[in-house]
Figure 1: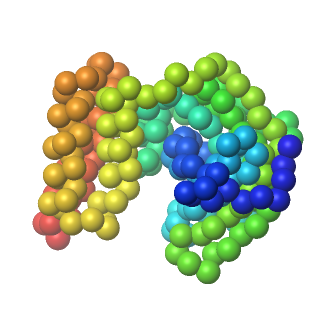
Figure 2: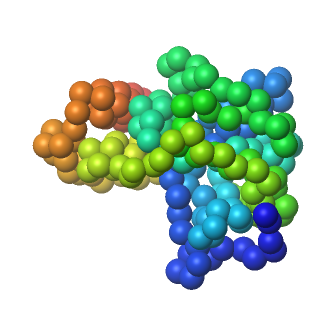
Figure 3: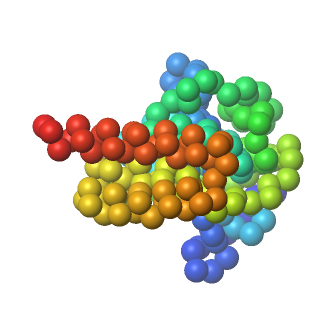
Length: 205
């Protein structure tokens, strides 16, 4: 399934947002949102985790992961800022040392073929060696897109100025208010509270 071609943004590669599972040193599973660069056939992936992340440490040590295309926006929201509130069901991958989320649309078992950590954001090339599909991915609605953008925003609160964060948060909140179900609203409120609490705590120190 794998080839040596590396997908490039602006050419044959595009970013696909999803969840990645890696194994911690003690054998437990780390779940984290990630947007790898992927080729059109989902054969080759480029992962770009920050070196401060658990995902980076696990990939450097183990060299294996499972990437998931998922419509579970709640799990994306929770894992963007920490561990999931309730551990999701998983099954053991057959061809790598890894775990697959049971409630996902599709999954891709990856093996790292190249690692360049000369910069803070690492460049890891990976080959897909196995994949499966649980159900079709029909895409995100506007509210789910807004929650996804809010999850990304929540990981940037120590980088971006607070006024920029709150401007984006207000814009995203308007979309959620207009288009969300209770499911998306709870996910957005969870992230909104996290962002506000952390910015308030930072400004008071």
